[in-house]
Image (cartoon, rainbow, N blue to C red):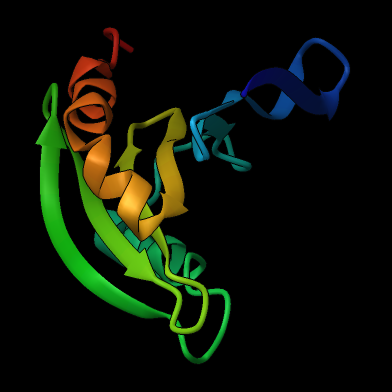
Length: 134
């Protein structure tokens, strides 16, 4: 089963609050989300901002981080995180990147067994992402 959806949220064409793409393939959800900075300026403390954002991926008190790692892409700092949900066997892998203009989120989630079986494909999705010059 495969489904796909694109979205845009904002105030007219000049002020997007977020836009992205999501698809479900073989029980795994792939999502790319781009959120422009509300202030229109780069965060003054990117590490603090990334810490706050990564916490938002823990939905329940029983959720846990399996991985938290600083990463870089095209000179922009980011985070790679992996979380698991205690009771549901759901695993989520995320790469976050902060640029002067946007927050980029690449999120892949699904049942642990499916995520393991599709690991090569998931890695290709993450590795194919690039940030164009700002």
